Image (cartoon, rainbow, N blue to C red):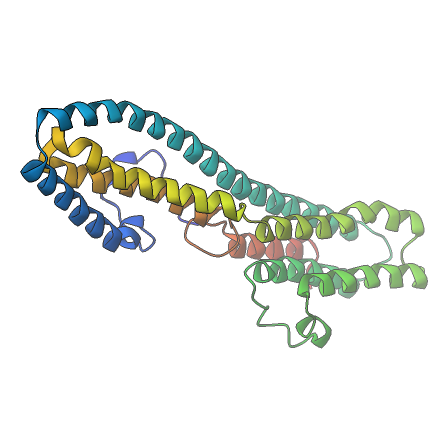
Length: 288
């Protein structure tokens, strides 16, 4: 995620980065500008008369209504994407709190030596690391010391199973009572709850029909702009049309980027940093 100072808003005007939508939309902006110039030339050269002006003025009222409808759709689209981003952030906040709580409870258990406590710390830290790789459709590259984790299809689940087996083995050995295990159970279950919630966010995109309709709406709205307003704006319609496309398409591109907050794009959640912090915290509570 891009770190920035939200109060230094003036510097944002001149700031460019590699995910800037202007670079993505560049070819399309030039094509739309050429199209707008052609429409402005044709209307000013061959169709510029009072009847055409009257007709375009009447159509502009309907066009404004379409713009209002499009704005409502874009607001819904942006809010939906941000809700997914924020839900992902809350889930990782829950993972942080649950990992700390479970580590603190294990550290307070009597009868455990340093090596046994460190085992839970290693498993908790690895769970966070494997989860952030799993959500990017990647595999943790440093699990060769644990073949059962490294070869598992679902690496976070494999780590969670090892954690659960460790606690149950302590119960069998008499190092952990049933009541103590019951105390730890909510945190143990919460780890998989977070994993499942993040997978739900990742694997449930916005409905295809809605996304396609919005893109078509933006396209036809922009294509109609020079037809409606070139008689009154002349060739000034060229930069205005390109700017309108830039604004509308940028909103859609931003929504597409943040609706999957785990992919690793610049505006996505810093899951790698959060996983590192979780691992460092639990290893600090349960040192090796």
